Image (cartoon, rainbow, N blue to C red; front, side, top):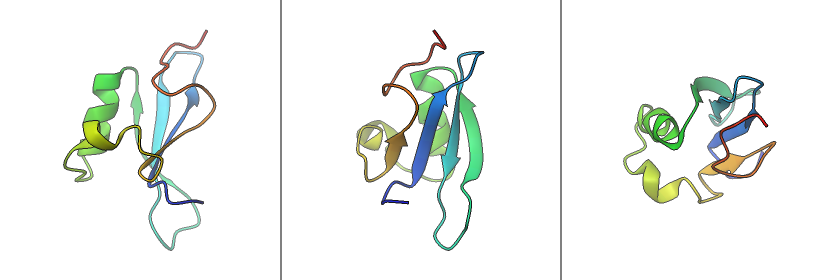
Length: 76
């Protein structure tokens, strides 16, 4: 995996996006939540201690968007 510490996966059929967090030395990402909106995502990113998630949400060194365009929440 590259430098991204958080991964926002593609929208599910319900519209939410799974969010996982990479921890050095682990084989798998840890599930940290499901975001249904930008607000949800910022809360999820803040919970493990990221101080200013709104400043890094579009920084690929911190957040990797997979499976759909960044900031897209619907499934359709």
